[in-house]
Length: 248
Image 1 (cartoon, helix red, strand yellow):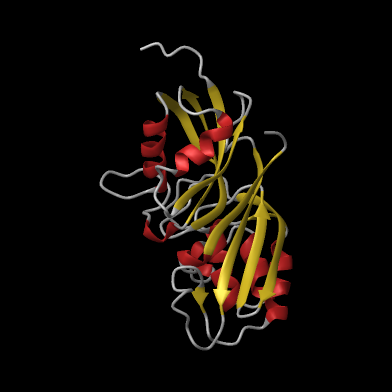
Image 2 (tube, helix red, strand yellow):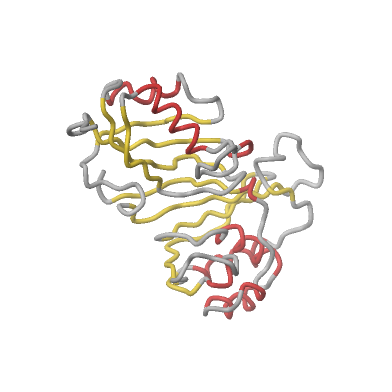
């Protein structure tokens, strides 16, 4: 069927609580963010195609502002798209903004950087409200050591040690543009921005910083094997915070 030219090319900024999802990507018989979004788009538009996402988050990982791009035919106008889609999306997903973009805009390849936040809940007593939203770590943390480790990460490095051994990645060099720890009461957050990330990279960086001294981490940034780094922190503390674009 020849649909003709799309009525609009959309950039959707999407937030979600990843607790009850089997990650982003559609999988048969599984509840996924992409699957729910496709279902909602199918109800609102005559047709949609070319849906791509800036960050394919894993099971249990959250997002404040992930980004998707797609072409649509029919359906609500751009200024009503977020409101309309939110009426048919489940309560743990929300479109927070909809914009019309140039057809050349691509949610993944047009991105210049991505920012993640990892939350650690460090109170001695656990909180039922933080179970799926942070990593409960009641042991004492040395903030100065963590800040020193974060500073070491900034720059261009080989992060082979911070992604699973079984991987589809072929290039492990990434540029971290900013990395720091922020204290907010009982929560200690690691905030990191890079051009792009390897699978499990942020969670493994967190786990490694909790286990190793800063001087031990330096040697890991030169292509060390995964076995040399620390544990991968649990997914519930991780949030895709922001995706940056030069245009669009």
